[in-house]
Length: 198
Image (cartoon, rainbow, N blue to C red; front, side, top):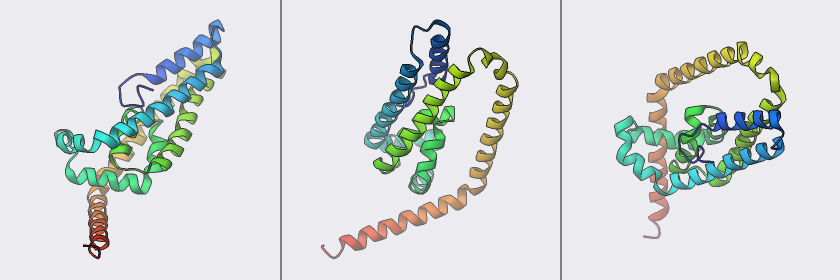
């Protein structure tokens, strides 16, 4: 829950450790660990979303430029969340660095809460439940799997992150231009709706 709220807590390590503890000692039920992990992930993300909605955007506007989040990039973030927010919320759950911030960013970028809640619940269930039950089922073979499979997963993750970074770098100007144009159109639409009653 704390990690999903935006605090850098090693949630994966906690879930794996608790699942292995269930397997070795039988002092905890794996179903309880999985349900607790899923509930914590979903509840934490909702708290993170509320934090982002209430204070996230003003903080990002004030301190964002210090870490490269310029005004244009914030508009780009809002644009991406409005177009692809569901995928970002679901997939972001499986990427360590993104998972800590995705709920806060979704709230700050004004993603619609019902959509956020659905894909947050799906992502939290697949991620937390998958880690807990997967670790438990692998059991004693986890040390064998963590060698070659761990290397393969690590390489695939690095390749995915590099490809995503390259895509965003290559397309940032084009996407930012589209986002600014969409923001201007939205502002004009809001202005025309307000003008007849003025």
